[in-house]
Image 1: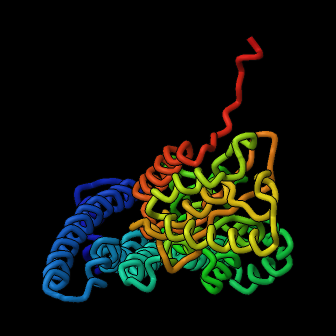
Image 2: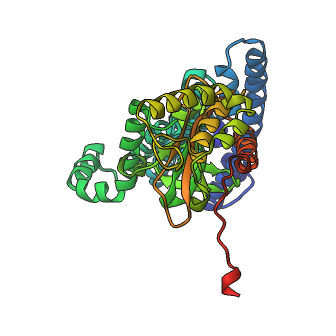
Length: 412
């Protein structure tokens, strides 16, 4: 090899070129030949290696090798042979300049460390992509763990590079890092908090990728699309992206709608504001008229018999409607609402169905509808709710009730 690296030097000396000039020209020519040779060799190795593994990955049923190809693992591995040749040839090419030996050694150390880190990174990304393709890992914060390993790899690589540049042992830098632990903790505070939070989120199953979460403080209301070491990305329903620090998922309050999505229905909780002055007792004629409403006919027959029996038994004077027991139009309407919901095809009948009267307000008496739709898709859910309240708003006049509406006419 030395004969080859000194070939042009001897040739130039024979041609009468001055010794120092011959040395420099020998190095320049040798470097050019080496660079061209390494470039061609790298292209050939890469092409052969990639073709070989592409064919294997195509035929293989396992997807892991496909992700190795996708993340260019074999591209980086193909650089090992040219780098090894450089380590072998360059010192012999610079044999006439012994003072360069130390610099070449440092240069090769940096190249080896950098190449090792890139190979490790591609393998970690391969594991990340492969695990995300497995159903049981799709909703786990894999990115957080990959980022932690990459930080460790970069820190170790930096230690080796500084050790090579300064000529000091690795233990010297590790000792210095120990002494600077307080500063390091301060610098990497968010990273450490994010890593711990990622573990807590995964172990406690607090949030998964794909969960619908709401966090008012950050304006987040949508699906979790990514969980990494430092942040959680939420795609809101208006297609904007909200970024939340990962550790805030363990230190602050937020709402996860997964329980609703996993349950048998999506909650309907909305109130009708009934005009209080429209609420009244029902006369016998009113009751008989409402018996034509099929959903409450049996109820009215049964309750009217009970009321009449009570009033007769207690000799109640019914010339005044307030005496004794009576039906009110709001009470009958409340029962109608429950019967309507119990017979609705898109209401989950195995979950709570309730129509309840809330405390009267200045805007009327709220009649709250509480039930669960059996379709949890947002668009379908809104249609079901709208259909239910369209019906109830249209039914209110049949019970001589009115919806409260704020009157602005007196302000004119």
